[in-house]
Length: 438
Image (cartoon, rainbow, N blue to C red):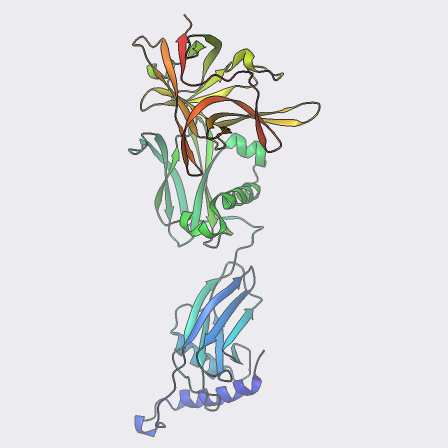
C-alpha cells in the first residue's frame, strides 16, 4: 500500500531540508529529534520476489519510507534523500507506510540479482528523518530450471595422501572460489553419469540434492557447505574415468544453479605383493576345526578391493548361485589385512516378489540383531603364519543406539518387508580360520 498523502508531505519536507541544508546552524529549528530504531529481516526469497519484515520501536502511526535499489555502494541516508528529492512525480521509487510490524512484498525482481532495501522513519509533517536509516542486502534466487558454469570456481585433482588418523588413502581435490557462493563437492564415474542420468546435470544435481538433504537434515546445511578455497578429500577412488562437480547450494539448502566440473582418469595400480597374498582359493574352518566351505578371492581394484565368491557355500538354502551372491572385501593397505564390510549385494526377481540381498553381520543383545548400517566394518582377517597360508577372521564391534557389542556372524540377508531374514541354514560363528588351498 502506498500512502500518497504521507509521501507528498514527506517529499515537500525533505526537499526543503535538502535545499536548505547549507543554512547556518542557528537558522535550524531547535529541539531534540526523536530516535527510532528499525530492524529489517528477509522473510522470504524467490526467483523474482522477496518479502522484507520491517519492525520499529515507535508508535504504530509513525510513518516510514523505504527504497529498493540495486545501488550497493552509496551511503544509505544520502541515497534516500537524493531519491526523495528527484521523485517529485511519484515514480514509485520511494514508498511510505505506517505500522510497527510490516511485511513488504517486493515483486518483478530480476533472478539471481543483488538488491538493497533501505528504510527510515520520518516526521509526517516535515519529512525530517527520525533516527538512522536501516538497510539490508539480499539476492533473489537463481532459476532452478537453469544451471550455469560459475567462472569464479575451479576444481582439479591433486595428490593422493594417507590420513594420519585412520591410515586410509584419500584423493585430494583443490577447490578455488573467488566469490562468496557456497558449494558441495561430488565425484561420480563417467559411466554412472551416462547410464543413470543420461549426462543430464540437472537430473544428477536434483537427485543428489534430495538424497544429501535427507542425510544432512534441513537445519544442518550451513554446517556442511564450503566457501572459498579448500582441499576436498574423498576416500580413495577406484580406477575409472571420473567427473568431479562443485555444486552450488545456498545456506538455506537450495540449489543455487551454479556449478563447475573437472574430468580426470584414475589408472589401475600395479598389484602389490601384500595385495596378491589374499588372492586364490581358501577353505573356511570353524572353531572346532571343521571345514565349512571353500571361497575364492579374486581381484577387483588392485591394492584396494577384492571379489569374494562362495561365502557360506551350500549353506544357502535360497535358490541362487555363488557368482550372483558375490561380495567385495576391502584391502587395508596400512596393515595388510582384508576386511569385511556390510553392503548391498544385488536384487533378484522371483515369481512372487523382488528381493534385495545384503551382506551384513549380527550381534546379540537379548536376541539376534542385524547390523543395519551400510559400509560398516564388521570383521577383519589377519595372517597367522609367516608363509601367508593361514589367517584368522575376527569379529569387530557394532556401535550404535547406545550399544557397543561384539559382532558374532557375517552372512547374507534379504529383506521381506521391513524384517531381515537370513538365507543360511547354519551361520558360522566368529572367529573363523582361512586355510589356503595349495
